[in-house]
Amino acid sequence: AAIMHTSKTIAAFAIVAMTSLIPYNLFMNAHQYIYYKLRNATDFSSSNDSSLLDDILAADRNQSNLSLGSQPTTDLQRAYEGWFTLTSNIACILGSLVNTLGTDSLSNSFRVITGHVIVLLSLMPAILYTFMDTDNDQTGFFWMTMLFSSISSFASIGLIGAGIQGLAATYSKTHINVVIIGQSIAGITTCLMSIFCQAATESAILNGRVYFGIAFTWTIVSVICYLFVIRSAHAKDRIDDCDPLVNEDEEDEEPEETQHPEDIQALHSRSLCDRCTHILQQCWPDMATALFVILVSCAAFPALCSQVRTQTHNATWGAYFSSVCCFLLYSCADGLGRVFAMRIGIASVFFFLITRRQLQNLALARILLLPLIAACDVQPRWHSPTLIRNDYIFVLLNMSLALSNGFCYTHAYVKAVQFV
Image (cartoon, rainbow, N blue to C red):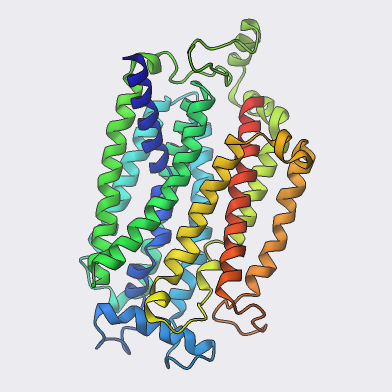
């Protein structure tokens, strides 16, 4: 019975962890619906939904001298991924800051539940927009979408994500790993949802309704799972607990003390500012490494990678190229990197990654991927020539960026948690 209860708890942790990134990935992967809303409504007003994506792709290929269309994509379409990355990541930082400042005054469960409520409230107007005609105010729709995505990212990553990571840290390394993998699976899930909706519905509007509707339902399920976790007998003793991360034997769930009780008592008596300073002193190199890994990844994905155009003339492949080669493969490679970092010992396989400094060097070396991805057929392009016209090379570069992201971030994150 205990094993079954543990399995249910781990599954609940995974679902809540996925919810912490699903809203962010949701708006990032809803490009077919978003592109329809931001299309050139004047020139494409006579086009039906099923042919619109082909019209857009043909227009993009015209900029690559493939002569398959006559109109470029709109400025709002080209600006979507870039503005989304900027606004959503700023919102994530603000959410994490609010979560930190509320540590003493607000319980962990209150912050996580509030995060779920805010996500649901931000998805409601997003669903409502799928029933509204926004052709006469596409700029308004663009900025309202930025607002909804920022609010959902603020709540999901800043409140839900930070809250479930903090709760998992009071359990064991197994629960920490489940949260890390769950967040990676969130990206894969939203990509598959996007591809499924694109294949199952001919209407881009219906695509958006189904897509956001599934996400809304998933968030409700996540609330139920989190309530199950916090109401378990084991969690009642651990919610809002500040004990350090402990190692746990698979057959013995009793935590091992890694600090003296008087040290923990002294740490609890400090102010929030003093505790944050103490944590930064302990693990700032690993936190800086994790932050740098995220910054390099965000510099190319999704704003740059999503603008790479396929070199084939196959209409079906062209319609799914961005969904599969950019978003899905990136999410899969990122998850593989996280699993690889957790399941395989660094010292026994990659002897050159033993030290913290060498891990930092690997994170720094990822910068080389940015100009290589930029050299692919990124459109529109005005000031430089396209040097790499090969779909397979772009896929390799994109997956390398994702694989190294998952690998480096996981190691830096786990090391930082262990030092707290």
